[in-house]
Image (cartoon, rainbow, N blue to C red; front, side, top):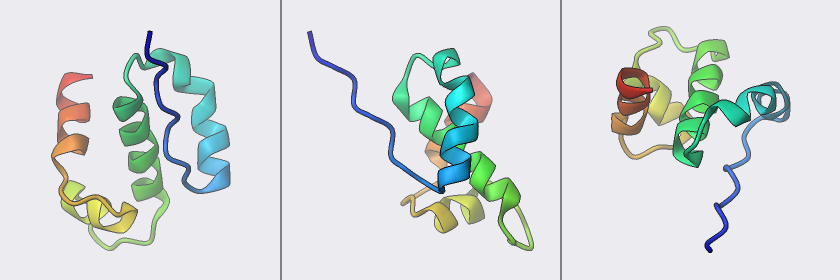
Length: 72
């Protein structure tokens, strides 16, 4: 059996806060998207759109965040 990979670390307090909700997600990618959206919400972006949040957290595109919001 393959062990699931660990989620990518972000800002320490976001990681600690989101850890409380980790068991709600069956997929590590969804948990990472959850953390990235939290980072986007607390960032100082003027316009908090998914493409802008994806840029600030270092993602190539915003489709993973969009998929998380529409299907989770």
